[in-house]
Image 1 (tube, helix red, strand yellow):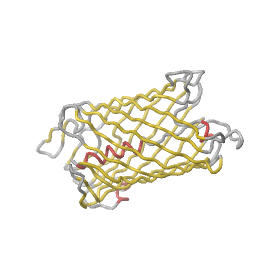
Image 2 (image 1 turned 90 degrees about the horizontal axis):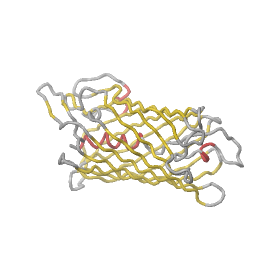
Image 3 (image 1 turned 60 degrees about the horizontal axis):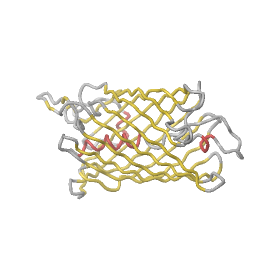
Image 4 (image 1 turned 90 degrees about the vertical axis):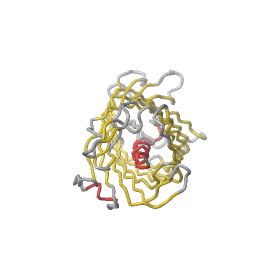
Length: 305
């Protein structure tokens, strides 16, 4: 059961602190990474694209009591492409889709083996795993710094497991993310950001067949809650330093399986041009119950036209 949390953890990190841009590059007015926070939407006709890559690797697992032991290395790479298009004059509605690609290896293979894409039977799997039609909106006109992103995650894989290798959830997920940001002080050098990700997991019970393949999902009939708090500091208008804490909780709604973990991390963002920025993040999964524990390394690009 511990492998299941790995992918949940990846989903947590793949979704971390999504940032948008606008076209103002004036230092006094504030940079694009300062002004268009995760909670604020793009304008009508603008396109917001983010490519985010996450590598999670682990050699530790925690049992149901939180006791930790070592285990053969397992690695999970997730590459996510987000596309959103602004459809409202008042920056209150954007429509889009999210495409996800994964490459996983188990059995002690090296962390960078996820980039081999060799499909070794019983040790590796890779490919596109899901697509998620999405809408992002600001529910209250007077609170432009509060927004909601709703998605329906549709799996496109044949099975969660194949010869012991977990790929991704093979069940429909209804996802709602709540974003809220709060500037600290009067010079816009500090920002607090709050993110609550909720995922209702549907699907059939997980069943294994003699050929090693599975049907259904381990997370069916469960609710995933991922609250996070992020603190950003801007030493200059083009650079953001960040620290964060997130908690993951999978709540049983009828499938007799629960798990949780807590992660801490740090990152940096840099404004490359007036439309493009780059971000790098590192996360450490400090504790958990019935979960995998490890580290994640993340690199993302965001472009707004």
